[in-house]
Image (cartoon, rainbow, N blue to C red; front, side, top):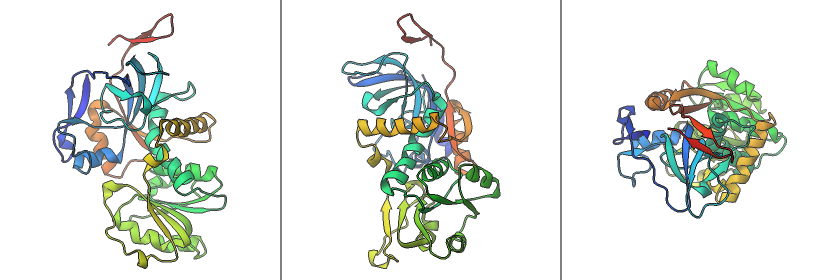
Length: 339
């Protein structure tokens, strides 16, 4: 099978489109033919050497995707050949096939296509965690979202609006304003520095916001503290861009609450994974959640997708598409790959 592997840590030059052995199933796993793989900032972090260092190189990148079941190992119930499935964390997803623990898979409903399913898993579950779990948004709450035109920012904006909140978004260029506004942002601030502080204070009558969602790295940390109201909450995420450094808790102002949000805490069991995924799929099917796909690339062009994401010029979700595969559906409803 074809796959994207990294030979060593570094820039996009370490990525290679190679032939790899077919995955071998073990008990409890499902073999999936990948139709779509999601691109995430964590993939860039892995490539740079910020994660997965315990895994030897060369290794296949990617953790998220959607596809069809090709085979089911012993000890697996609830999955059949030909069914469409999606996943949020399975290392090795930049490939044509993958062997995944059945507990990591969710069924895709007929009303949601593979691209939408793959596009909503990582960022959708993260947004769900942020707005319903880490900070359960209430009607009337005012949220400030950094990178509001990115895949996560767009989904987070919509979920906050579904819960009755108001959104002030920050984007890096005027070209991104329309995308953030279309997702429901009530106000959009353009800028890459801490100039947003004065504007947010003005928009909130100098009261500040109830919650800030900040994955933009150390450069915005102090500004995010400054725009919070008394007893506000700072949701910090996105380790790829680095930490703000040591914090003296006694210097935190206005009785604010500060936390590092990890989406795995939202889906800590297979039951929670499937429950929260089903909610996202329902919202998509009902037209309540729009998934903005900002770019589709051939699997072979993964390096270009990384480059585009790192440039901060993209909006929405980026996807990788393996070469089209063919198959047949038999009389008993099962599906068999012919490649």
